[in-house]
Length: 206
Image 1: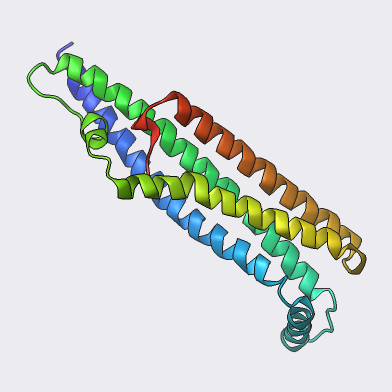
Image 2: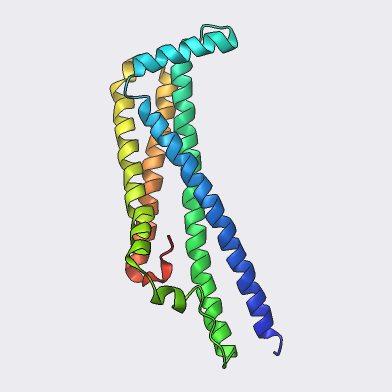
């Protein structure tokens, strides 16, 4: 049993490395998803003008008069918004689970190490949880998904309103992707907040 603390601590370090790796992925997915969502929203401001630009560019670059360029680009934006949001949500949930797991390892290590307490990611972190960290946590877990819900709902309404001028296949595809985004975001909010309500700040990570 003499090697058990060393084994646990190695596992602790490895788990923390996984957290750092997923945080980097989370930030990348967050940035890309945000850009895609709001680029997609921008297309609603003046669709006729953007459609003309899309058609002109497609004719210049591809040498063909692609009248469906605007709808194709719009569908790509909606689809990749969905893809990167799913990846973002996955990373956030992995990070949350890893933090809960690493706190459990800390507790086991502290039972074995009588003279020293390991609490960097648990007790020590939570003892100093300033307003700024709470605000960042609130933004990531409440404001941002709420903005995604609002943007997706507006975009869905716009797609339905413009249904007569949209190719049927593009319309069905866009609506399906947007509905999935809304459902996934609601499930994400449900998981995060219902779990938060049952736990302390132990699960909060900005």
